Image (tube, rainbow, N blue to C red; front, side, top):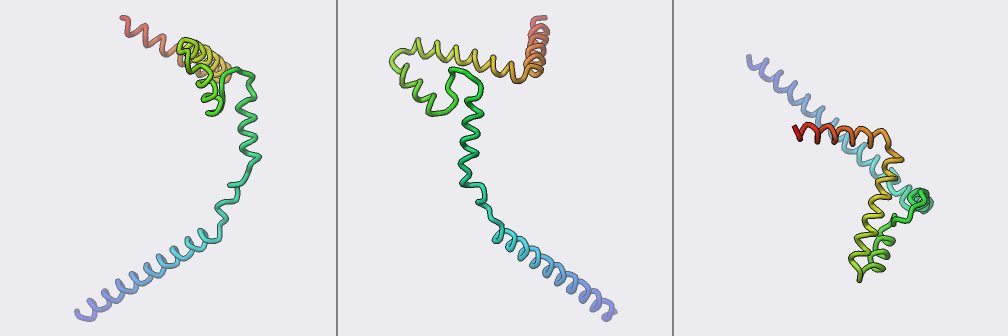
Length: 123
């Protein structure tokens, strides 16, 4: 009986030692991968920023695309809130037109669903 218990304890301890070795190897491999991988390989890619700016201004529209353009427009109309509201309305309409031209199917489904929902709510 003592022999059986001693063998069971020995098997369990060898299994735990094996798990600890595997865990240690896993930690070493992950650390090696993290230390040898060049994480900042695309950090200085200025061409990407230029490409994004070109894409944003590709659609010929008068509404601002960047934060700087929004701030400039806000400064221009700072003293006349009526003109500012009018520009916001025009820009919102332009944005909706652009959205509709890019996603016509989504727009059709959205409007038909909302009209169906409004009709059901009215009953």
